Image 1 (cartoon, rainbow, N blue to C red):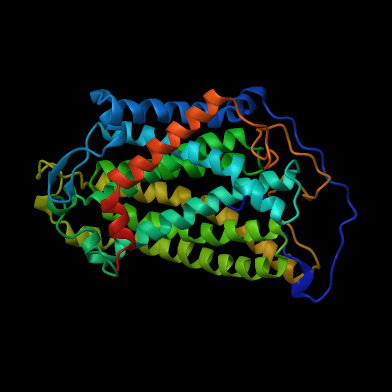
Image 2: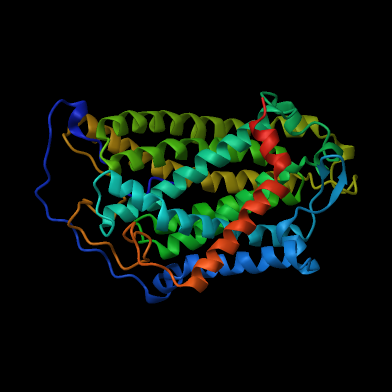
Length: 408
């Protein structure tokens, strides 16, 4: 996630308050098709999940198994990649969209109302959007970090390439699950940036997502999943602080937001630039030494290690780094204004101020009043069936993942 939306550093760092006298901008008109899709997102995704889960767990249909289960097990906690992984990614793309719409419809509006935000205001919509991103980032980063902590390449970059390709063709269940869910998340982001209100850096975000998806797919297909795993954790770490700072600001915790934003700025420079450069350098140096010629393509039948692949990875990373440098320059301008002026806002935002009087744009109905009308019995039955199926999946299909992540 980038620096989208506005992060206004409150003047508490300077000991004075500033009040903006400019009226809020009117929300831009949204396209009818994305708004229509987002409006029925919860209903459509819940129906799709219900069909797949009921077909798999109750009707025992063979076609549903590739969507729900991870396949290609070759040993005890050893898995390889295969074509059916695409079905699992599609399933989780729908599942993440369902979880996002569920939280944005029934959870985060309650939190916003607790903070005194009107459930029909524009700020409530921002709380829902940022709250979902923070929830996903913090959850998946902790899972990914736990997987890396128990891996042979924890604080050892040589094992990112040593033993290639034999030791890298197989991966534990947790790593494969993490990789495929992350890929589904980035595909979902392509959908999100087209249904949410368009930001000024829309095309930079679009390019960033395509580059990230390309890196994830390429590293997964060429057996460089260890390198890709570490790289995803490095790139996602600052987004935890960014989304948390935005969420705190929208909820009114301005002073804490300032401190979290400072942590985000430090984490951004360390991870997205220094650590990213270290990862790029490791491709150029360690991969050259640790993957001998007999382990490279075409000398090894299962190897994808070639100089064109190495240059391709470096080229894509350079494109990504160029985008990050553009955002870094914007981040520096925010920090400079925070020191020299009383009020600072992100120059990439399309909106200047989010207050209680600013109506929510007609993008989707993600912030209804917490007390809604009673649903029809059929709808209630569908939701109840879906909840039973979802909890059945959690408690019966993912015990290995949950145990490995949260065990001591």
